[in-house]
Amino acid sequence: MGKSANVTPRNSVSADSEAQRQKMQMETVERTEDIQVDGDQSKFSAILNILRKLVGVADIIDMHLSLPSQLLDPIPNLEYWNYMESPEHFIAITESDDEIERMVAVLAWWFSKLLKHTGRVHKPFNSVLGERFFCHWDVPCSATSGSSDVSRREDTASSSITNVSVGTDETVDKLRVEYITEQVSHHPPVSAFTYRCSERGIEAVGIDHIKAKFTGLSATVAPGSESKGIFVTLKQRGNETYKCTHPTGSIVGWLRGTLKVQMIENSYIVCAKSGLAAVVEFKEERWFSKDKGNVSGKVFRYNESIFGDKIASWRLKDIPKTCEVVATFGGSWDQQVTVQRIKGPERLLIDMAALRIADKSVKPLEEQGDLESRRVWEPVASKMRQGKFAEASRTKRAIEENQRTLAAGRKERGEAFVPALFKPDYSASGRPELLDSAPINM
Image (cartoon, rainbow, N blue to C red; front, side, top):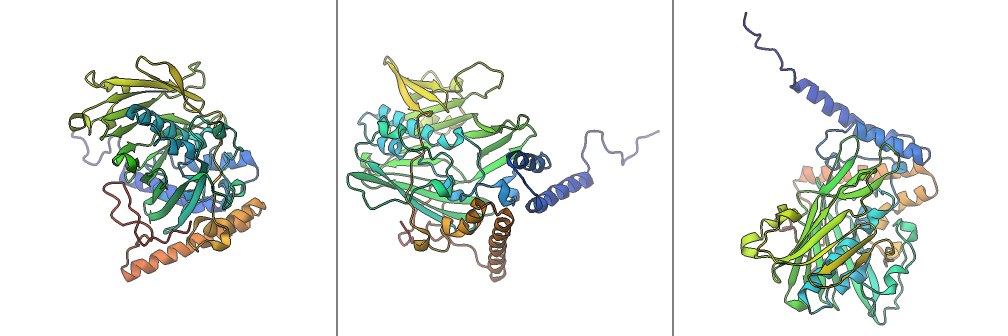
């Protein structure tokens, strides 16, 4: 007797069951605002219960999960996701006339931007389309990456709106590093950014776009397709440019109820002008492991025409012998990392344990535009700080509903969103350019 033609293979998933799974996941998203949270442990449990229902979703970020205010931190996304935890390290990139030392300085700054991930895991507000954020840091001219000023600042690692300074005009003998960013897309959520220090002729530009996935034991956050890395350019050195890719983070500790971020997989930095590159390899940590080092890497010379498009996939073992290694580095990315040039002494590259997040200067609320981050989210943040979470959630929903109304209006009129600060053709290169007419409120 022949087999029935409509028998479903044992390991297959029917279209109906897949549709049902997706419907349940969307219902989870729609119900998240109704969750009641009381205390830190309840907050953790609420997040875990949501994520458990989203196991298997390719990209949680793309689902635009709207969380109640109790599960958020009172800080805007554009303000939180900045890479100037230590602007001294950024400025120090320009100092050396030795091209290898400049690459080492880029590495030190690259590690410094991970400082926010060494403490408590934060979830900032999602940005609205067209939202923008401006701030600056005033760095003493005498400050370098090895100065005592770097390690003696007040601890501002929690990065909330309440503990960030509003600067003064006393900028004598100081270098200014500016940060300009705008949310240029909502589907997917994408922001463009520029950092610059005109006195030193250095700038860094890029696109922020992340994707996230929950497996049941960890949440993985990685660069999205729009993110090509951070491009650091030294204008006073013939536009020497370093492409620095982002690492992948794994949020672990769900079973123990204590969340922490681990860095996993590989990142790289390349400079075509100097012919130098660095591969950074993270080692996934095990809670029972006694290994003290979780990162290692090499700086090497490479031929751009031969290897330029291949380095992105390299692990340390893949670096060809024809590429001259000029320095090695390693240690713990969240503690200390050391570096050693070939035939040179080992020295400290960065001490993350001693580093503190630098205070930023932001204009007061009354001088900010309607779409500036703190102006947008202060009505929510202020209620959160007062413990009025029900009111905060209602205010947050009103902001999000207004965005949906604006989006529907644009769709009805057949209008595309046009960024106010950046040229719209940023996607291919991942290197956004500021408009000459950009209304920068610094």
